[in-house]
Image 1 (cartoon, rainbow, N blue to C red):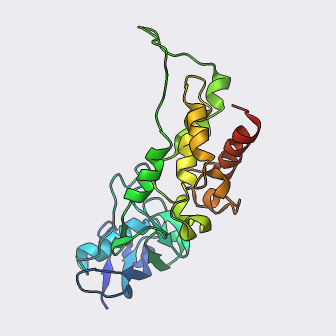
Image 2: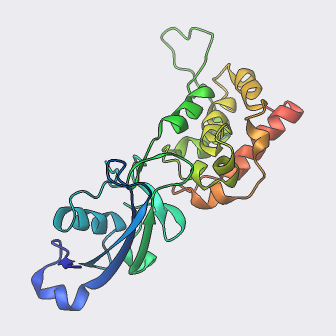
Length: 250
């Protein structure tokens, strides 16, 4: 096992600032492995570095075969969702000083692992598409904008923050056991348009979510809310959709 220093830390400050980080990463290569395995690495990082920085350092200096997704690296694209010390998180926004120096990293659960920390996101996106996550408006506004009041906007503002990282859906025990369940993220996406005053497709979405695989599969465990890196009140959104179905409150 080799110890690699963070290239971002000035030499004069290394002895004072660097900490030794131990990573235990769940690996799986379908070309060589019959089952997942664990591999351990050690790197030296600044406490202000991110988990993503530690993964980069491992890949760039110790094992180039380590595979994971990342894109913007600023908590906007949602690409690098993974299980870090037992919780769904984004590697790009969690700092070593907050997470700790002993890291256990796994792929998010409930989706097929393609390689290492990369999972097949297509079933997740298919569920997202099933709720018609786009504005449906039957009128033609011509050259005018579709205006709404600030109060109307506030009604669904929270659920516009979703970045489709799948942290909420893959933290849901119902989803782990039943892949047909549409999942929290899809319900959040539906909520964003169901309660939009400019949209005309609310009833069609509610009919979709009132099916066997829909919103009433939720057992209100709050895992989804705790896992959301954007702080969306996911469970509240799910309950609002349930009430809209039961009491026609759109």
